[in-house]
Structure formats: C-alpha cells, structure tokens
Image (cartoon, helix red, strand yellow):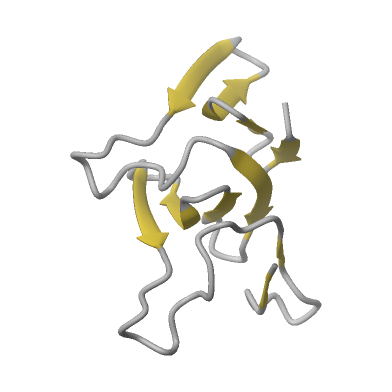
Length: 111
C-alpha cells in the first residue's frame, strides 16, 4: 500500500504497486482498477504513488511510468496524461511521485 484517500462519498481509494483499489466500507465491496495496454481509457500505470480529489470529484492518480491518470468516478473512465516529446506543454516525465491541489482548488502541482 502506497497511499490512501477517503473521497467526498466516503469511499476509500488505495494506491498500491499492483494498481488502484476502491473500497466501500458500508458494503465491504472492493473493486480493482489496473492498466490495460489495449484500453486507452484504463489506469495509466499500476504502480500508484499518490492520490488527490479535485472540486469536481475526479480522482487524480500519480504513477511510476504511467504518468497522471484522472478518473471520472461516475463513468469509471480514465484520462491519461503522459510525457510527449512533441508537445512542449505535456508533463515532463511519466514517473510522477505526488499530486497536490492548491488552496484555490486548482491542480497546479504535479511532482
């Protein structure tokens, strides 16, 4: 286990070396999310280092070699941001150690 986040809906999100788990304390249900190389809407990488929830309830996931994944919790679809040497404004590396939301609730800090 690398990190834990309790979201606005009181769901437990657990980042591990084997992917991302969602645990519902009330129902005891556990759901796993993993990288699937043939599905671009899956988790970007299985080694999860950090989690953050934005104002809209999206879950931001930092991973080793998987870049940044953003999970729309209502659709269970991930949008993945990876380093792209062609685009100067892409993230600088696919190894992301931490994600922080600043006091203005902006996603400004990806480390």
